Length: 91
Image 1: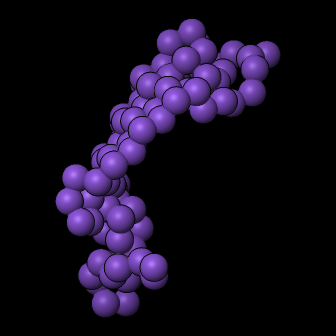
Image 2: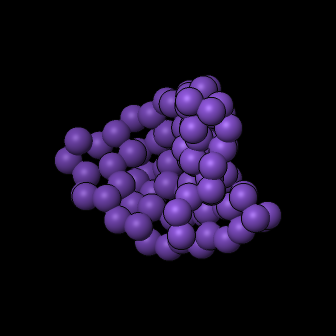
């Protein structure tokens, strides 16, 4: 896992709110999500990349003056640690 985050938050800011989002599938097992959020970060950047875990993938978030845009691509499947493979989620 790689996780990098830097930011400056407003402790008196308003609560979290999801203003807009869209999501879809790229392939059978890969999906994407794009969101516009309102929160407490005055400025911020977050980067994450995971492998071999549930819903592993890439995530990026940029924040400015209380608003954030977040994008992620992820695997729909769950990681089975015993078998060391991805398994399909129950439908």
